[in-house]
Image 1 (spheres, rainbow, N blue to C red):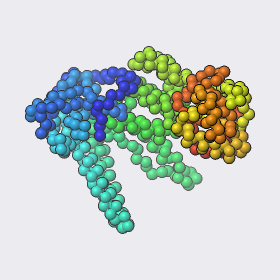
Image 2: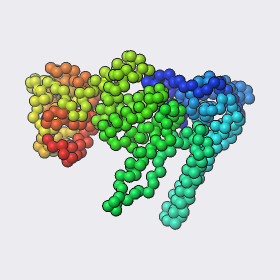
Image 3: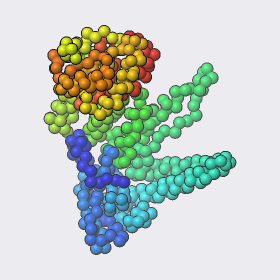
Image 4: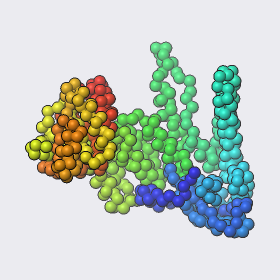
Length: 474
């Protein structure tokens, strides 16, 4: 379901105003919704991974309404919203004056289009796509009923393959016959590479990396990163995300090279340029995978610090730079900032002075519900592996009550090094380690360099095993 009433403030802040010149004539689009009368409908548009309201239209007693827009209305895929559950798409591309008539119960199949070859082709594509989809769904249902009949299942599978080939041929036919249409543009944006036969190397073995290399090299075939119509489709954002999350080698340095490459490809189009910067900034600001905040810092240094993000306010720009500078000392490989705090015996303990092959920094709170679950897991790992790994824990409590702190230590049997976070000689650890909530875990090597951060408690053992296994000896 499309949620048309959401307000995407972050997009407004990051992207700025959309502008794109498309010709000399204003748009005049007549809609007739059979059975609808004396109400309102919405015009919305796709942008990135969201849908946004563009205008409100008054529907008369015969179900008619008129959408007028200036000549600089950006090209792309728009939506006529009848209700939250009933809507239909239409194309803004080459046709400026046209009409669309349909019935809410079946808006695609009942659609009548006049004076818009673009939308006529688009709806032929939608109908054919729906027909083939329904055929495949029917085969899947039938297959479940004959799961033990191999011959029948094979026949259904072969039929599904034929349907898929028909659909692919239909799409390629549109691209070949109507290359300048928006439908062809959409098909090119959606398609993924078909892997050819894997070649055999001189040693007689198949090239094991060929499929990946070919898929990556041809992933964006037919896609023009200077065409901002991509942004006003429901496909580009997800394809971009798939590329960076699943196609690019998941190594921060590899990702950085790809980020720079695609941002530069988009530079000739200001809207695409700022979108690629926004997407990669947002995607790596709080990355899913550990260590990828390095990508965020690179983007900030290259584009924000150098003044290339002119569409955002000075305050927003400064805050982004400030965040990058805050987490810069916490990148994997950096020496962890020292903390000198009082322990349970009221003695100062310097984190840097602790002699351990591997040191866990555990930021916790006695009233933290998640800490109640994580600390017993850490305790079990600590008791079983302290000697094996030369492992120690430096646990920083955030609570200001000394009584509550010490009672909680006894209750949880926390026999490692416990220190009181508020009583420190080295500044606010929240700022030093970007601690917003608890628990948070950092792992350090014997040189007090960060080797992992924000690990779940149950992943600590696996991480250390792999870290040592692959050559990172203490």
